[in-house]
Length: 71
Image (cartoon, rainbow, N blue to C red; front, side):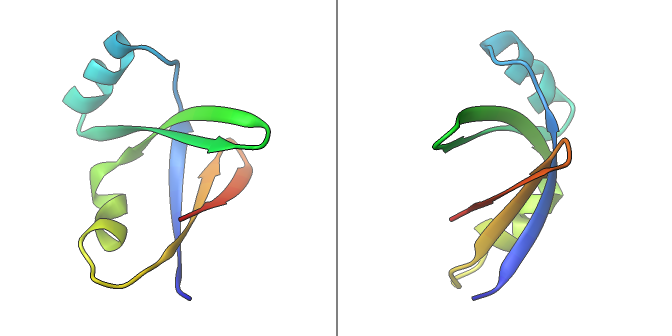
């Protein structure tokens, strides 16, 4: 299975922050796991290879030096 690496930046939760992130051309994201959840943002073009494809891909998200795998 192909793994796509996406780098993100930490962000504060909240709707006001997400509006500003979208105005900058980025996507606000949340990844959930056993340890809780983490809010981050990614560049729009970085997720194009995952979203616009008929293939199933695994995603490795790198935020603040931490790496998490997601589907």
